[in-house]
Each structure stands twice: as C-alpha cells, then as structure tokens.
Length: 492
Image (cartoon, rainbow, N blue to C red):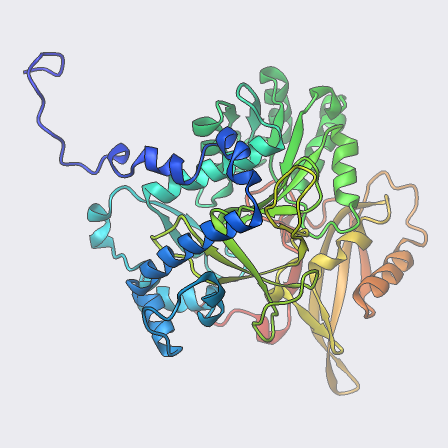
C-alpha cells in the first residue's frame, strides 16, 4: 500500500496540532480582526462587562481545579461558589512572580502553577513554551496549549488591524523568535490572521542593522515591530552606514513599546526620524497583547474581551482611583494552562480614560507603561522609579536618549547612605557638553523629587550594561550594586 493509493490509511496516534482545538469555536469567542472591529470593539460598556463576567466565572471554575490556586484560595478562607460575579474578584488573593518562582522550585520544572509534569506532556497535546525576560531573576516558563497559542495570535492581529495593518502589508520584526514571546506573537498574528508578509529578521545580533535596512528596501517593508531604542539605532545606521534617510522607506507605521513617554518626546523622535506614526503597546508573555493604542493615540486600550485588568495600590493591594498610579493586575480569559487569575505583574500603570474613544470603542484605556514597582529605589524617603528618568534624559538633544541608573551604598561620616548616579550617553556629534550635566541634574530633581548625580558617558558606552545595542530583550534601566541586592552564591 502507498499513500497515493485509494486504500484508506490507518488513523494516526500522534497528537496532531490541527486536532488539538476547535478553530470555529475559537473565532466565535475571539472574532477575527475585521469582524472584531465591527462588533466587540464597538460594544457598549454594559455588554463588555457582561462578557467579562461570563468569562471570569468560567476561568474561576478552572482555577479551583488547579492546585496552585486551590491552595491559595482555600488559605484565604474561600470555597467554591463564593465568587458569584466579577465584583467578587477582589475576594481572590493576588499573586506575583515570587509566588510562581516558589511553585517552580517546589515542583520543577513547571510548578503546580501549571499542574503539568514532563511525563504528562504527550497527553496534554502539542504545547509551546515561552518565558519571561528574566529581568527579576531566572526566566519563568509559561506553557501555551493550542487554544491559547492561536488565541493570542488572533488578539495580536486585531491590535495591528486597528492600527491600520492590512493584507499585503510587509512587516519587519527585528525580534528573534526565541523563548521570548513578542516575535512569535507578531509573526503568527500577521501570517495566520492578517494575510501580511512577515520578515522575521531577528534582533540586531542575528541580522545586522545594515542588513535589516537592505532587506527592508528590497522587499518593501511597510510596518516595523520592535523596541524604540533599536528603531532609533536603525534610523542612525541608515544615515551613517548607507547615506540614506530612513524616511525614504515610506514606512506606514511603527508598532513599539514607548514606556513612560509622558511628555511624548520619545514618540516625537521616532516619528520625526521615520516620518510615520508610532503606536505604543503593552504586553507580557503571560497575558500576550494586553493593551495597545488605536489611531487616535489617546491611551492604550485594554483588550477587554481577553484580559481583565485591575490597577491596585502597590502597598495596600486595594484598587486605586482613576488616574492614580498602581500595579497592573491581570486575569486572562483565554488561558487554562496555566490559568492566569489576578496576576500582579508589578508593572505600573494608571487608568487614563473609561469613556468612549474618538475611534468609537468603549474599551478602557491606560496611560503609558510607567515602569516596574519592584524596580523602585528609595532614596532619602523618596520612591524613585528608574523609568521616570526618560523625560529628563530626552529633554536635551545632545543626549542619545539612553541612560542607566546605578545605585550604591556609600559611607557618609560613618553612616550608610544609598546614592544613585544616572549615567547618560552623549551623542558623538554634540558640539559641546557645557551645562548639560547641570541641566539634567536640575530636571531630574524636579521630576524625581530628590537630588541624583548625573555622569555623562560617550555614545555607545552603555550598550552592554543597558542592553541597548539591538540584542534580544528589553533595555535595562537599573543596576543595583547595594550588597543586599547582589545574588547569593548558587542563585541566578
């Protein structure tokens, strides 16, 4: 018998991906980009809330079957049936990456958080593993079953569609398809659910900046998706290495991660260099595309039908008033392996708008990502977030816009004291450094509320320490050299 004969073939016993989920059900629950834009995106707040409540109660049922949540919820005095509506979400305890780490250590390699062991993998169907960036320790694994892997791609494609991506667009993705999630999410969303051509060039280490630009010119890249620091580097490389203005590429738009760009200086620099709109986004490997800007660019819309976001006070854990800064806490509706229920991301944000946007959507909007609450440094009683240095550093055109906060414990007349230096790169073509340090120190004092020292360094000097040279991963903005913050022997 051959595969080309008319005789029937035996059924496979392998866990084939296409049989692992119901595609028609998936796109009913999470409509495809153009359908989404005409329907759920434009629903009333009441209808959105009803959908969230239905999905929340469903995911809480899943949580009770998971040993990680069952243990934590029972310890909080809860029992199945106590959570009856979305209003009851505040009764559930939050958790953070430290709790996940404990779970992983107690039951390696995936923890009871996943409730999966290596021996279980064949029975669980095809799985994909992504990890955190490891900015707060060893990278944490997050498994995706086929449903979650497809759902996150649909959700990512929707955001691009709202921003203006269409079939036939060519998107260049200078993020390596590694254990980090962003490159995969972008590729799969564009390829599977938007009819776009993704150019998966990888980071600047995989494909040099010069090659990135040559590929873009050859194949007509119309959209870029990567971090802003590398987009600026590409614009510089286009001029310095190719002698061409990057605006000649006629880019349609940039999808990026602006961070706490509250004064708009980073966006302005990107748009001036590239000659096109730059759209902000927010996400993590656990929640995928959690929030994104529409074309109105008046806040980042939460992806309300897939992730329910709360903003809680970092100290009390209670909800903050609209406009106040707090920790982003996520409950994900499309995940069951693992379920994500009240995960304190320890990323800072604030609710900017809850009314109808100019784009027509009632999806709530947050301000830019404001940094990490666990990267806070307390100097002389003042809480300092390194990402809050961005507006000051970019306030003078002589800087490259790159910086690194270095914290050390020093001895002042026999008394230990924490001090922070802000290392700031100065452009090679800066005519003079006169007054720059003093101006930056004054602006930082005004912005941070405490005196810090500025140390001016040459362009490129921070590339390795701050991870701003086109390598994979987010830029690093804090180097804490205090003894209590150094890894202990045997720890990562």
